[in-house]
Structures are given as C-alpha cells and as structure tokens.
Length: 383
Ligand SMILES: Cc1cc2nc3c(=O)[nH]c(=O)nc-3n(C[C@H](O)[C@H](O)[C@H](O)COP(=O)(O)OP(=O)(O)OC[C@H]3O[C@@H](n4cnc5c(N)ncnc54)[C@H](O)[C@@H]3O)c2cc1C
Image (tube, rainbow, N blue to C red; front, top):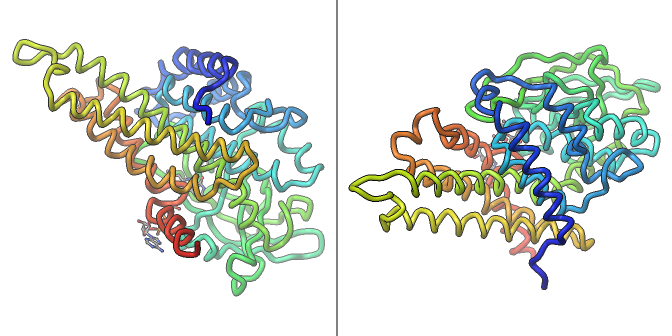
C-alpha cells in the first residue's frame, strides 16, 4: 500500500492551485453575486489544459489518470473557491466529454473531443427531466427513428451549462415500456432545429454556473449523432460513474473542505475574544479537529475509488461509498466552519457564506445521498 503522490503529481497540483488563486479566486465573489458566466476565464481554463485533462492526448487531452485528475481538480477548487465555475467544468468534462470518449465512434471522438478538450466548446449532459430525477430509467423524452434522423420530443430539467453548451448529451427513450433498456444517448448540437432553452433557473448556490430547462420539439438529430447503440445510454452514463462520483464531485467536496479549513484556521488564530484567540477555546478546537477528520476521511474514500479506476478495477461501489460520505460531510463541514466565524460567517465579507450555500448541492446532484445508500445497501445485500 502506498499513500504518496509522485513529485510530478504534487508539482502539477501546485501549478493548478497557483493558477486558480491567481485567475479564479479574485472574481469568484462577483460572479456569484451577479450570476455571471465568464467566457474569458473558461478560455484560460482551456489553455491550461484543464478542460480535458484525463482525455487521451490524441483527442486533445493530457491522458491524466483518475488520481492525477482528482489531485489537480481538488487543487483547483481549493485555490479558486468558485464552486459554480467548477460545476460547469465538471459537467462539461466528466458527464459529457468522458462518455463521448468511452462510447463514441472514432468519427465522433475526432469531431467533438478536441474542441471540448481545448475549451473552444463547452458540453453538458441532459438526463434529468421535470418528472424523472433519481428514477432516471423513467425518462419521458422520446426519440423516434425516421430514416437517417431521430426526432426528439420532451424536456430536460436542471441542466448545468444548458444556456451556453455547444453540445448536449441528451438521454431519450426509443421505447418507454423498456425503461432503462430503451434509453438512448444523442449528441445534440447548439443550433439543431427544434432545440430550445426554455428558461434559465435561479439557484441558491453555484451561481456562476448557468442552469436551464431545455426543450426538444420535433428536434431532428442526425443518425451519426447517436452515441452508442439504441438502448445503451444507461451503460454510457454508468460507465462514467467513477469519474463522476470518485473524481469530479469528490474534487469539489475535498477541495472546498480544504479551502474552508484554511480560512477557519486563519480566523480562529486571529479573532480574539475574552482576551485570547478563539483558537485557544476547547470548543473551537473540537470543531477544527472535526473538520480535519471529515476532510481526511473524504479524501481517503475518494482517492481509493480513483485509484481503483486507474488499477483497472470497477470502483463504482467504492465511488458511491465515497459520495455517500463526503456529500453529507461537506454540508456538516460548511456549517461547523461557518460557526467558527460567528456573525462574520453570516456576512458576505468572508467566502464561507458562499461556500455554505454551495455545499448544499452535494447531497442532491450526481445521485442523491439516499440513492448512494441504496446502491451501497443493495450491493451489500446481493453479496
Ligand atoms: C444545480 C443542479 C445542477 C444539476 N445539473 C444537472 C445536469 O447537468 N444534468 C442532469 O441531467 N441533471 C442535473 N441535475 C439534476 C440532479 O442530478 C437531480 O436533481 C438529482 O438526480 C435528483 O433528482 P430530483 O431533483 O428529481 O429529485 P427526486 O428524484 O425527485 O428526489 C426527491 C427526494 O426523494 C428521494 N428519493 C428518490 N427516490 C428515492 C428512493 N428510491 N428511495 C429513497 N429516497 C428517494 C431523493 O433522494 C430526494 O431526497 C442538477 C441538479 C441541480 C440542483
């Protein structure tokens, strides 16, 4: 067993963290306040190679392993403290570009991945619907074959990057009665006739990331934009689960925990009450220790899942265990960290107020905490 990173991995993570501190952090509060998506920053992320880090080099990525990717994106979140920007980056990469890499034809990979990896394009995943969330097999958006096209009809809800995406990986059904076995994935490009943004959605947190409801009305998608076989969309999205739960969301959770711990420690050391730093009070020390325990437990569970991916092991069960833990831990973490700041924690002067709101998404997105526990329990019971 080896818990260490290579010097190259550590040096790369430092470079990414410095980039995030210099380029992302300064505008994070403004983007949250004004719900602004920053194209300029997105291009810089592309230039840094962060829009497609784990994608193979032949398609414009860097071929980074799951562990290296987790370390780099953890550093990005810790240094930049912009959960919204990172949510957009993660949705683009882990639930759009990676499924294309894993399930696309050679022609699709060559057509889409270099533009996605460079940041010239941004991607999205359209799976959730107004009436199909945790029960993803209950998708109602239909895809009817008509000669060399599929005709899509339906709507998608809560889609990250929906208003700005150049390509959306849309999951529709070719036969509702087949449930999961009818689900089919399509790459729907921005200007496809019949594809509309219905409305942008206002959110509690992650406000620098645009979210939308999307509508498909007799939307004609060419045959060559079908991703994988008919009825195989579930495999296309579940194959990316370790990337999604063990790397993408894990990096956000542990990156934000790292940032909050750093800020809480600084504050506890410098804030004085009753003539001494509040860090001298045992109840504050108890909180700081709890934060460190939650951070390390979340990190170890996440890196285990990512390591399994790199070792060619399945890792989906371990990724769900990790997410079941770190998602709920992040909410408790933000709450305890904010408490250390007292009244200032409730004000916008410190980023803890924003990160507290951001944290609340983690037990909801990417499979709720209840769903992670269903996955863990059903594997335990099946044996
Ligand atoms: C900011 C944001 C961004 C998002 N981005 C995307 C995106 O880019 N693409 C995309 O496709 N989706 C996206 N989503 C959707 C997200 O994945 C869903 O919100 C999530 O899967 C839960 O679905 P739901 O909201 O419909 O909740 P529901 O499934 O209706 O769940 C409601 C509650 O019931 C619980 N529940 C449901 N079923 C069970 C069960 N069997 N047993 C026990 N409890 C259960 C849930 O855990 C939850 O507590 C996003 C959501 C948000 C909030």
